[in-house]
Image 1 (tube, rainbow, N blue to C red):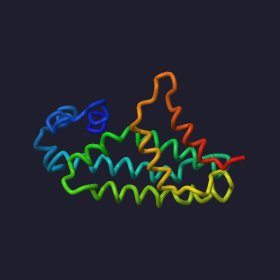
Image 2: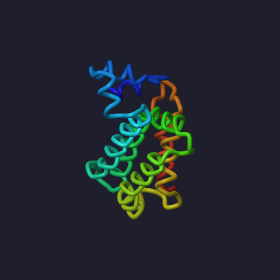
Image 3: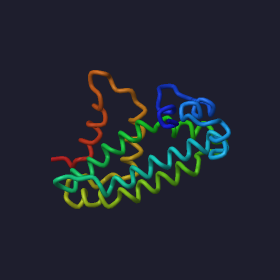
Length: 165
């Protein structure tokens, strides 16, 4: 319920609203999460766990196809969870929250084998890092696509990862 509440456009649900949607008392919610920041961190970590675990579940006829399928999954999850990352940044008083730095490192480590295999097969250019690719996808997740061209910018970016020629 909390994930859906935070996913709504412009959402900044209160703890009371989250408790109401979950059908629990506010005291129960605060017992598990002392504040909204802790709840948002938990939701964000769960999404990163899913993205990292997806490395072992993606398929493709070639290493490049598997890598691009994983990037598509990363983007879809990232677009859905972008508001959580924004909330983490907004609610953190000390710069970039540790959970964001740790999550980025974990995601890169998880995706690196797919990325390297796609590069070795010649399906992904070798002048870009996985961190740069993931940062680019995360940035594009915040860009509204034109309704007539959903996902167009992501396709352009992914196509740009293929070696020329």
